[in-house]
Figure 1 (cartoon, rainbow, N blue to C red):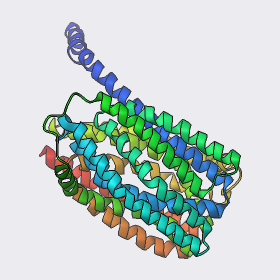
Figure 2 (cartoon, rainbow, N blue to C red):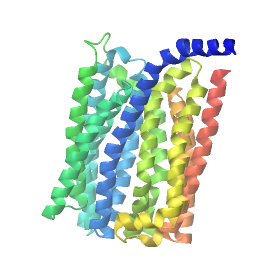
Figure 3 (cartoon, rainbow, N blue to C red):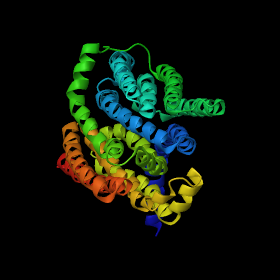
Figure 4 (cartoon, rainbow, N blue to C red):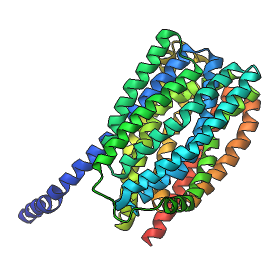
Length: 437
């Protein structure tokens, strides 16, 4: 007994106490990452709910369709800019991150100008054809897209430094400004499909500038061996061409329904699906925040042979809230729909218990997808998303006309996400085994 007690004392002195500062740091970083995502996602969630309540279903459906197209550009931007930055910024360019970030932002503004021309052209086309809801949505989106994606880029740079509290400060500013702008537009009677996007873009520019200035202050002195823009473009293309393909393919399972529903059903069906998704977004964004925070951690863990242990802990952290939320939707989904939307969209509330599987499946997709990214295996991610794109496209064309718009779309969403989680888990686990071997 004495030996056991002395061993316990030595364990506390030699292992537990020295580990406490590091544990506190990671708990704090996790808190700031969750707060950051909650602020950004919360403001978008609240405005999305308000638009669903205030706009006519056709107008909200047009907004949802345009936003799904924006998400395609966003996933491509993430694949070519943000995702490689999380890997190279915390590794190869850690000592020259200032110049590296400048090169990324300069290319961002050059190329995203093309999206403005494209979306405003699409908006003008719809207006000429008499589809005013879609026309206004794409005109607003054309102006907002480069500004929103600028915020996405500089926000993730705080995660490269593993300082999500810097991003959280911008998140607080974004929430206050965005809700203030949306509320002011509503009071003036000016809130519609276009001005909702314009408010999003303007507040994103301000919040992005705030985060950028904070990140710059956290960086050390002048860079050593500052990378050239050509070198950055080459590396990002070598990594990002696979992530770009994966991004384009990943867009299909989550957004193709908003394009197909107006064709096979109606804009109102798109609005209903978006209303259901709104209620899932808080947990999905929570999972995304933690997964992004852990990509640099996975990168370090693979070198120290502790990747399996870190992966298991991440899964536990993410699965607990996802499962609790799923149970909540099963028992209180109908009441939640009534409370959030004021009695609208109740005819589809039964789908919530089925769609509540999405946050659970996203835990496995995000965790094992982060492992594949940290191990620089974007081609495997692209392969998985190509399978998902084929399955989701085929099922959508079959199930939306066969079972009706919203039932077919909602069922397809869940089936495809479960398949995606399975494929990512198998591929990520196999990579960890090979690394350990």
